[in-house]
Image 1 (cartoon, one colour):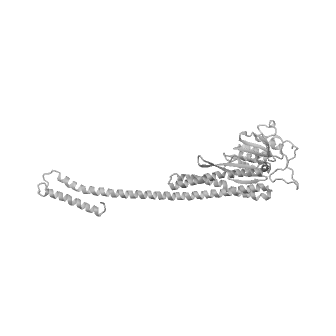
Image 2 (spheres, one colour; image 1 turned 30 degrees about the vertical axis):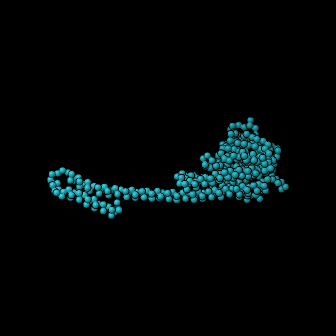
Image 3 (tube, helix red, strand yellow; image 1 turned 120 degrees about the horizontal axis):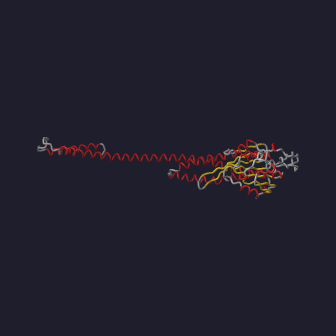
Length: 396
């Protein structure tokens, strides 16, 4: 295997892009022994299963070599890309991976001298957005988002980007973002692409941030619908508010760190001699990120206010229902009192009539001349007395 060629120290008159590796000498270095081999052999026939990783070609979405902003080679595997980069010392490799295996990431780390902490983060998804510098290499973690119209929810993806002097490696976890459009855009702008890996990083940042715009529009539409549901008294409004609030928490975690990340990049413009055109592009991306972050903060506050209003409306509705139930119970109680009063009034003559209909021979009033008038008068007096009592108590 051919060893990675040493980098000459630039002279004082040599002007080099801060992220561009200096031209390496064309004379190949002595080959290493297989035991000391840090990356795949240049000749596949010389590699052995014991000392050479075998990358899974399915995870390589696209790998290409560029020179002066123009694609000069396309590879289908990591090994082919490594060989092409060694044969083109002034080229730049752009490797795109989707859900790579640990072996592939370790192979990349050995080939491009990536820091072990960055490799560990790349193997593990669910990282927070961040920007870290390891020597000449930048490691960037981004959280992309897309709005799913059918499900009315936000889907988040994760993207890890390694940016070195002559390479860009993207490791994608999740469906978003689609970097093929970014690659086509950069290839259609060779003047921008020839600025080097830093330009590719700008394009990726711009694509991720632009992907937030449809999400913001979709969330705004959802909030408008929720407001209508809340004032309409839809019982499902509370569930939608809760679910959307959780998505906004994730969205805020994706966008808020980007503000400080881009400010850190802008702070290094002078130190690393960033191209003036890229400076303008990155400032534009920073403005968009700040605007999006403010919109997301506003969404969270709006959802909190809507939740408060919804709780107030639900409480008012419950109070109205309780009041209606109380009024219905009061009216029902009044009707029961009336029915009970008339039942008591009618019970009195029934009781008297029942007693006098018992057909006993020894009853004192059976042969009394005034027995019948007395019984009728007794019924009338009892009924009248009960009526007056119930009327005085407002039961009738």
